[in-house]
Structure formats: C-alpha cells, structure tokens
Image (cartoon, rainbow, N blue to C red; front, top):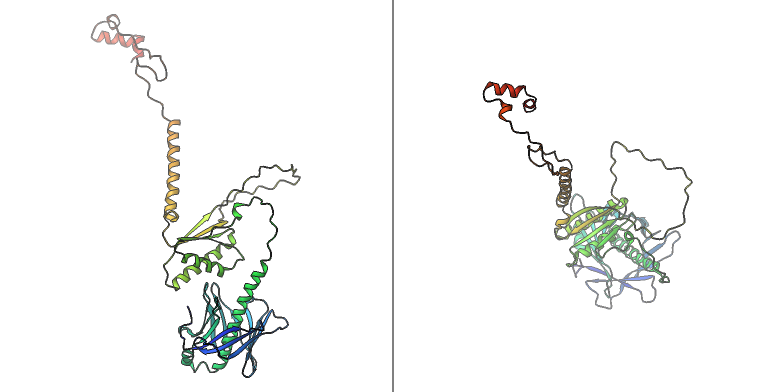
Length: 416
C-alpha cells in the first residue's frame, strides 16, 4: 500500500544536512516540489536511564511539543509525552504475530500497524464494535524516496465529537511514528554492527547433518527466533512463482507451537490479501542416526554404579516428536496426504504378513496320507508290502466254509 491521496496534508521526513541527530519535517499538500520550509524538527537528546530519547520541536515558534524514548529497543512499553502542559500517553506493543503499537489519547485508542514484509504504516482509530477508521498513513524511506507521513483529515473530521484536540493528535501521530522509525533503524544498525570483520579461516571439521544450513525454501524455527521475520520470509518465498512449497522445520519439541504460529501467520496474511489458499501438511520426523567415528579413543573404565533399569509401565505415555516439518504448498502434494501415507504403511505391513504366512505354510504343512499298498513312499525307493494272493487251498472253495476258514485263519485276522 502507498500513500493514496495526493491532496492530503503530507509531512516529508528529511535528514538534516549538517547534524545527523536532527530530522526536519517539511509540510505540503501532496508531494514536495522543492523550496518548502520545514514545519517540525525531531532532535535526538541524551536522557539518563534511556537508550533512546528524542523530542519534537515547532521550528516556527521553537516550542517543545512532545518527546518519546525507551530503555531498550525490544521493550514493549515506551515513553510518549505531550508538553505544554505535560501529559504522559501510554504507548504499548500489543501485537502477537503482527506488528502493532497502540496509544490512548482523550479516551480514544489508536493503533499503528505495519505490513510484515512492506514499508507502509497505518494508524487507525479503534471504534469497537464498529470497524476501525484509518486516520494516518506513512511510508519508510526507500532508495532515493524519503519517508513520508500523510494525515487523513477527511476521516478525522467525521468524529469531531470524539476527537476534540486535533492539534495534539497530530503531534502524537508524528512523534510516535518517528519513534517507531528510529527504533527500526537502530535495530538494523545493531545487526550490522554485530557482523564485524570475518574471523580467520580454520580447517573445516565434519558437521552434523542435522546442524547443516537449511535449504533456501526451508525456515528453521527455534525457541528464541523472531516469528515476524519467519512470517515475512515465508510470505516472500511463496510470492515467487518458481517456489511451489516451503518447509517450516523445528529441531526441538519446545518450538513446535511457535512453528504452528508461523504457519498460521502466513495463511492469515494470504487470506487478508485475497491470495490463494495454501495446503498444509504436518510431518513428524525421526532423529537421524549420528555417524560413528572411526577413530578409537582411550579406554575408559567406568567405576560408577550401574544405572537402574527403568521398569516398563503398564500405560504408554505419549511424548511429542523431537522434529517436525510443516509443508505449506500452493499445489496438492499427494505423497504427503495422511490417507495416502496410512494406506502405504498398511500395504507394506500386509506384504510382510503375507510373506510370513507363506513361510509358516512350508514350515507347518500337514503330513501327507499314507501311500496305497504297492506304491512308492515319498522320498524313498522302498515299496509298501503287498499281501500275497489267496489260493484255493486257503479259501477252501466257495460258500460259508471258505468264509469261516478265512475268518479263523491268522492271515485273515490281519485283513479283517
């Protein structure tokens, strides 16, 4: 978003050519054409107990209008005061995932918001349960374009009954915005100052693969990392048409909730900007096995008592996974679909059961039936004995005599 109305009252923030601690604000209705006189001046001043302190002066009268300051840049509460007469204004950070600072003046609550990856600031008048109303727009300096602030008087004039001190509100808008811009600039200067001269190059040593640098489309979320930076990077990556998905990874269970908040912030931003929805897949990753060192160290004799073996408990206690990967994709990834992954695991388990059943059939097969007389036994060359045929002497002719003799004979008892 850029400054929309060129006819609105605009203040252009210009650094002083001689003193770096002074910033002049040139007023105009629309873009400056050159030759305009500055209206305000922001002067950085040293104050005991504060890391940053600045005051806003009226260049025409020289009056001290307002001041702001803070102890450290990361503090969630900053000093904001009006002078003549003096009045302290509460100025607090209330954003969770997004950037939002608020102050209360004459019973009205005003909020400064900034886009996650942009350079635009928006100040709104909160009128809950009614929608908020924009009253001020601002933009950071970019390349050769200076920072600008634009006050939307046509919206302020709609609430004359609520906003009685318009002059004081304008002063607070300018002072609070300059405090935010200076804090953002100080953060960037501290980051550049920490990156000093590069240390001498040492001989490379083997690095654990788990600690290696992530891929360009991966975002590693830790327990103390800045979630706003992660959300901004994820949004920028997904705006590239060549990147179809990104991965948000964690390496400790304590960072899982923060990774989910980063994913929620990305989806919320795209929904607010009317972008296409994303497909989310959450994968629990297992720890990779560490490579075993080939060099053997000195033999160590452990003189401590043996550690007690923990007894298995009857109820299994669930423990969160150590690593987690959240895939945010602009397309459908069938391989990461939970139903697809579950069916694949079932098929592999079913194949293993089939193989085991086949092996069990060969091992526990039922014995075969005994062969008929005169046939060869399986696995042997011997034949089963065949009973000798009956002769007429043994049968004794036909009739009942033959039957009785066969029944009484010992040979007949064998085949009864």
